[in-house]
Length: 559
Image (cartoon, rainbow, N blue to C red; front, side, top):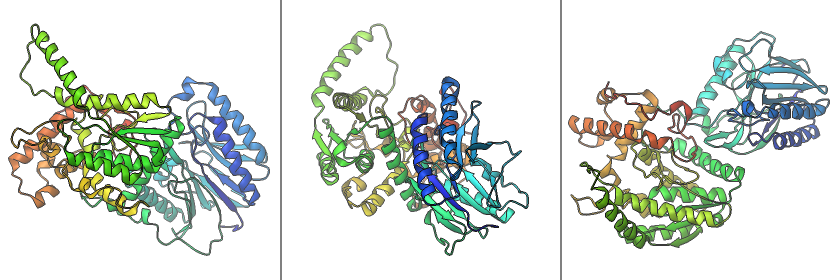
């Protein structure tokens, strides 16, 4: 750079959507600290003042635009001591950056309008890119010394690697330094991990803000050291399906904990209530909730039915003791019997005018799941600031293997975007990496998943999930191929699955499993639209707007 004395503050601050006053006050706190440390410039993320996702609140509440303008006018009064770049959204719903200098709004930079992006500080010229514009890899004028990129990128599988690669391309194309400023915090389904960082023109990182935490980073451009290794940026992008999830487990864990923490705090909740079955899904949820909210704010309820094994009851109790969460046991056999008798009586009367077409009945299975949901909701309703938790996972959601108003019922669904095989890996990772090591009993990780809702007539034992569906290793690769390559049944038949490399699988069975998957996917679409809010984790997610499918769609998946 022409002037090595520029000192820049990066304000990686958690905001609240629509609460302009709160966001403005946090901005001013950071600005004052930056002034105290003799910074020349402070940079806030994209959309900082209004939060992200913005949705349609600007159209619905026109007064918010006035509040934003008032906040900018108040913040600009500090710009005689420090220059400021702060993100907001204008009255036309366009993501914009205000450049404040000498107590004035010096420049407004609007997303996708590249007419005037240059600012100068101490004879150093900066070009401003906003968020996704960094992927355009623009060729800049030769008088630009650095790029500043205020962003609002969510944490998804491989997202950091893609951002890092795009930044490197911009640096190499223009021979400049790069300042990347990202949002932190979680709002609804979106999790922003922060991880702001500075690159020199040699593509080396010279400073880095915290990952998944708020941070105020003070930097200058006379660095004597560079950061040679950052684990999150050296992970290769996955090109083939694998059960080796170790590279993404830390990010997944941090994303889920932050999403829970912010969802509860920003919505005024404090306590979580969930059913503890002794199975993997509820176990993972309990650990995440304890870590995000504190064990004293989590209540696990064991609700055994007449099909629940003693091992499952013991596992649930042991887990609660290890996590030091609150725990009660309330059997549901009596409620199950009463409801079953009532339904049987009703069915006899209804059969007088409706023919009962031949189909497999799940009534008794669903009675159990919905009875448990009634208990969870009842407890949450009774105690202030308590929220029931839905514990469905992604593998089972794809196939509709979850009960509406049953195990899908809750105010938040932490693991809806995590497939089952990854949950097994996450359980082992948490046992090794959490301060409270080995909190998850090994028996939970080793047991084959099963809802313990019905008997398998062939074995006489409770039906296992993989008996009702298909092996999770195969199922999760189908999901991976859909989300990464949009493959059809015919496409998938041409590829050897990881499961096939370990097990004998004839083509007829493979095709039958694929047809079963897509058939159940078609009938599960309506469930996707009524699931509780859940954090986006993967590169594609059933709860994300860009991936949702019309309920009434009827696609031929074979071609």
